[in-house]
Length: 330
Image 1 (cartoon, rainbow, N blue to C red):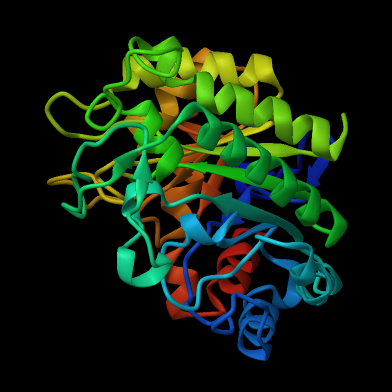
Image 2: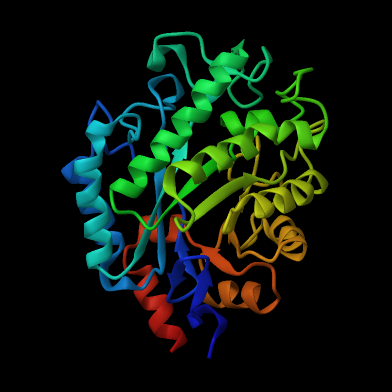
């Protein structure tokens, strides 16, 4: 059997093949962040036939202060749960598993969107956006940790199969992880253990909110690809800590480089990161990045660069991609 077609069990999450649709912002939600018919139609189309084993829903903001963009999906209060149930049910009906990604934008938010000065671990300009945030107080950090926990509880109540914590692409948890933006001198700063303390506290709070068996994934920006930023060495240490804390799948991407690697455009260009993380942990690792050809995906699995393959833009452009790819392997 081709590797791509093999099932995989990650904690309580049973996947029927190795194909994942990674989170991609659609800007299709209602202005207040509620699920729209557009979003339901979009995910219904992408999940047709159940060829994708796991669909990770685009990042959703855990509190208004952490909203990244207009028409972003909200997981910020209990009023969203009922409409999100329709979304999870739609995807399940088509035979796919569904996980929601929860996020706080931190200094990647803009004052125009949130109506206040964005927050961050330190008052350091955001390397991707250039805007200057204010430093979070200890009390505000506690509130954000609670915000992640409450958001994860809502994800579970809405019928999803798991929750993914977003720490990539230069958003708040990534800002804590990166030495470029975390200059704190308290327990949340310093070495890689200090810079991942926020993550571990979020994981702990989320676990308490969702119970022992609910799958928790982490999207990790495993390198900033910038001078003085996070490195794969940092991420190998962090990955081991996240596994110990109860993460069941690590979803590898870029840090402040976003979903790109400078000067790289080949299929699966994050594989040096995913491969290094995979060697360091026993939980499954997702590799995403420029994969448009099912044979390339198969090769990446065979060479043990990852355990699961995320295909984003190819599926975004062509909703029949997954069917043709999976059928072509049989």
